[in-house]
Length: 220
Image 1 (tube, rainbow, N blue to C red):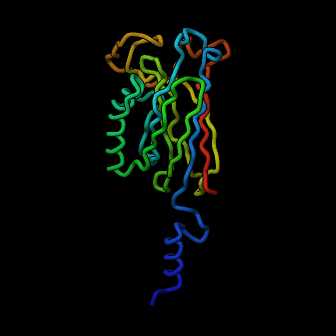
Image 2: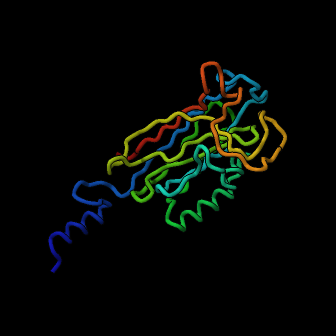
Image 3: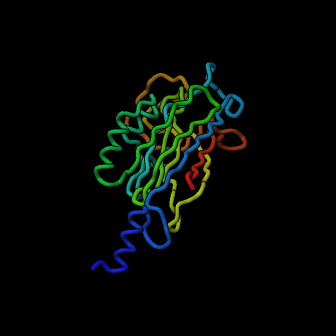
């Protein structure tokens, strides 16, 4: 005969719960990227035809996966996103990370044809893959991008309701160009990823943010 505890466990499993506290195994979120970068916020050599952002790409993952980090060397996938907005190689890297159990849901958001503007996308996260990272190319640029890495979607065993972070401009270290429309100058050896502190994003008041990213749980 099935014990009472086994029956209770089966009920929780069927309802998508992990235990009597009712903590869901998965949760749905909306990522809203509000890009404020413009000629008004960052006037130095701002592109005459305006700026834009490539299609957003990211993923949910565990603590063993890192999309980018200050001082690290960019992967081939991140390099291609930062240099020309192409995500095929990064998607292949995601597939390998998923095979190793490090990555969960791939996230694909639209491009932004003109800045300032907003990108929004919904995604699902699981307890196993409860961190979020994403990137999008700053365009035009030699190898600059913005994004966020390792956003915690669960804190103290509970899904967050909302969180907001400031987005900064990053240099992937894969090209020596120092202007928006610089010619291709492949960096050999490749440099480390670092915050972009060129005059384009550094003023007397400090670094100019690219905007903000807000992650909100939906379906509560």
